[in-house]
Length: 327
Ligand SMILES: [Zn+2]
Image 1 (cartoon, rainbow, N blue to C red):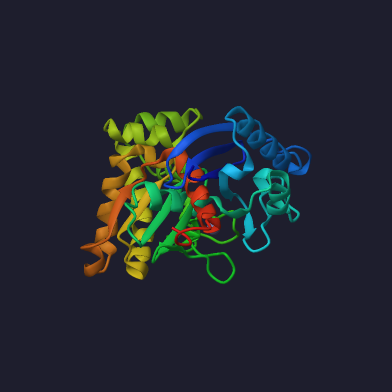
Image 2: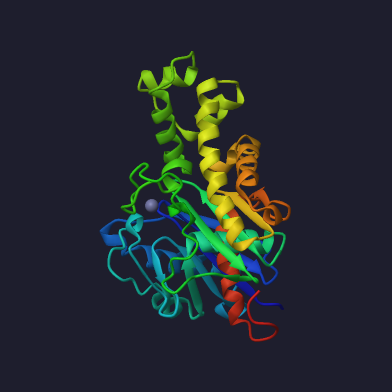
């Protein structure tokens, strides 16, 4: 029987798991709440228990699997399998995650950051279409990214490659959580869209349902901005244009540097679909070098919430004894 893969997508509120075949097809998937109290010390034992329980339920043993791949927030040391600085997990000190899971499940594990894992997922089984050069940007609570060139993730000398969310799109712009100003994340994440909305609303004088929401201090979400833009709200359309112009500009820089076959946009904000994609593509094309403009395509992600577990599982292919190493 062909051996299987385990993918883990660790997030601040839920941890997603999947068993996959070595072609990347999900055989089963499940999720548990991420228990971040007490300095996040329950997270790894909970993961080990959940996988053990699921193996028992499906009548599997460790011998049925090639290995485990995991995507996590924070800074990852891939050689040591450690994670640090994952503040949404309360992991401020170095966590020996790889060692603990390996000992707990008797399987080899490789860990990478969550955005890189999602990028690998879309590269392998999603909108990447298995092209060898793909850039993935995820617009969620923050903005993350992953860069695949020649079929391999780019990490850089200190793991900082692919930090697309911190490309400066507005010199001296909004202050970012990273300490600098004008990062894409402050304009194109779910909270970024709301930042832009509040900024533009200050100078807007026309009639707008969105302006009423802001003036009445009702809760505003990026989803509402895109919904109202779709329904002809002038202010909402100005906001979407601004957000997409920043996003398209950042993507043109990536396009001009890497000329990938596909630039894939995922994450919750990308659920806006064509309302996001069309103006972003327009701005990308205005700022892309001609040979890039004619060849690099901007696409929406296809795997949704499964991108993380699928991409994480692909990391474990390197433990395969037979056949080519890696993807
Ligand atoms: Zn930043």
